[in-house]
Amino acid sequence: MSVFLGIDIGGSGVKGALVDVTTGEVVSERFRVATPRPATPKAVLAVVAEVVAHFAWGSPFGCTFPGVTVNDTISTADNMDPGWVGVDAAAAIEASTGLRVAMLNDGDAAGVAETVFGAGRGLDGTVLLLTFGTGIGSALLYNDTLIPNTELGHLEFRGMEAEDYAAARLVEREDMRIDWWASRVNEFLIYVEHLFTPSRIIFGGGIAKRFDEIAPFLTVATEVVPAALLNNAGIVGAAYTANQRYGRDSND
Ligand code: BGC
Image (cartoon, rainbow, N blue to C red; front, side, top):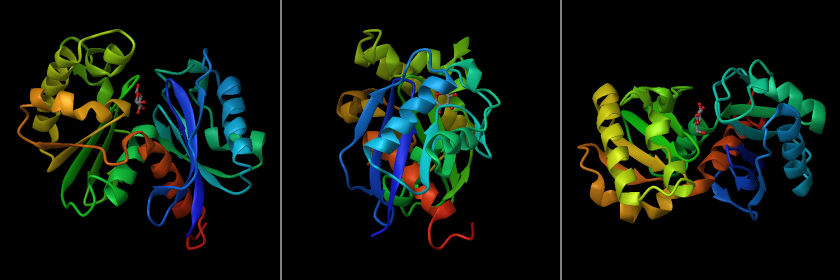
């Protein structure tokens, strides 16, 4: 068993757990701290250090960020503080924890985890994962290869950003009825289906646990399946990526 810590920085919570990266199984309890507001680099870095300390973790780990992340550097932070833009998050985390970290976008992490261990496993062709939460995260994979930072939540849709039209926060924090919301999601899925013609759409985010209530409103032709790893997909994808970058068999 090879275990890595995965941390998932989200718009509402920073969550961490230990993951067996050979099976994708979460092997510890989940530790969650509310995302500080404003979500400045300083405040969020302190929470990441708190999560690391909680697990008494002392080696490389993986961490997601809810914004465009290229070579560990953040270039958008719509649901976080704008102070993140331009920050080399891996260098900042290393400075505060002393540990090396592999950074990637939260939607991408969930997509990797679902493709390797979950609802996209063994599927050839194009797989699209969407996570519905504070925003809408996305991951596009072709034959298991991730095309990172697709950011489909920021597509213009019905005159606004898609995530303002159909993120789960409308249900979870703004009291929209789930059937109204599910119809909006369906419209958005039909739109992305036209763009990518995926073999399968994986429906992720915490609200995926209510998939039974949502499914009756999904008329999109593509098969839509709930994420198998539910809310742990980001954590698992982060840990898996850390193993790929820093594990025993990596060349790093
Ligand atoms: C961000 C994405 C992120 C998504 C879900 C969006 O606002 O731009 O990078 O994946 O929220 O957290």
